[in-house]
Length: 365
Ligand code: 13P
Ligand code: SF4
Image (cartoon, rainbow, N blue to C red; front, side, top):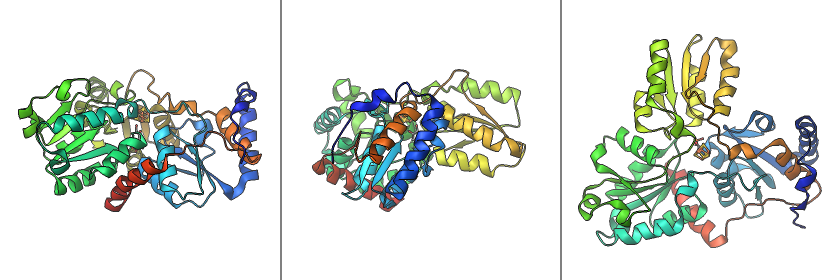
């Protein structure tokens, strides 16, 4: 099959309306050969074209189940990689804009994690004592590292089960790249904050002493989500004064204080389900990405539920936002013409090891 990436310039100036029609026509022409998967943070003008939607865990399971030849992933790079790893060899995973990355995933890379593993060897044998756990928001080579070193992948939905699995095997965890998800999950498991220490990959030995490494239960990689870091405890405190009967729900990528002040903490799927199940008239403050919050605010308005965004500033996942109608139309029309653009292909050796860590996760959750 001819591979072409040259023609996006023809789509760039297209009006959004024109794109909508072209996307609909291309999807009709492709039929069951293409499936469009969308993460909950996807912008509304793309999300409306989804065949299947979900959080990271659900999307990875859906990618493993679909029989479509083309998996068109409207999400970010690591999600399309997971789809490639879990799908059949003949299926093709496509990310309509290759620049749709995840800034948190970029906060850890293989050379830094390998260096951390080497440095840990100066204190203990990590392959005996430390389970490496990578959040699914990470590059495939980090998942492969976990596969090779007795480790596992987690999502925001299953992080607790995954940490339980990890501690049943080795007494410590190296958790990357999101310190907040790791800390919140450890806290739910009654691990004292003093035993969850931040590993700073830019410092020698993570900035820790051998004694600190020996006493730590979880080493939390110094990474975070640039979107969720915008939500602050003061936003909740101020809102609660104005709406004493209101409920607060946050994603576990928010900082510890925000999670602690929230009534509920969970994945994007969990947030949607919890608001959906609440009584008419409930007022919600939601600490996660703006596209999702705007969508559920509209969806649940007729039920008398009021859904508000936690931060006073706009906090969108600007990288996921890059999957716009122009890129989706471009990717789909190329498929109609028999050309694959923006295929995400994880090298075979890496995919095999990453799959071990992903399969461990899927077996646990
Ligand atoms: P979910 O798995 O909850 O959808 O989270 C993915 C993500 O990137 C949140 O920022
Ligand atoms: Fe990554 Fe944050 Fe965007 Fe989620 S919201 S995909 S963690 S940058």
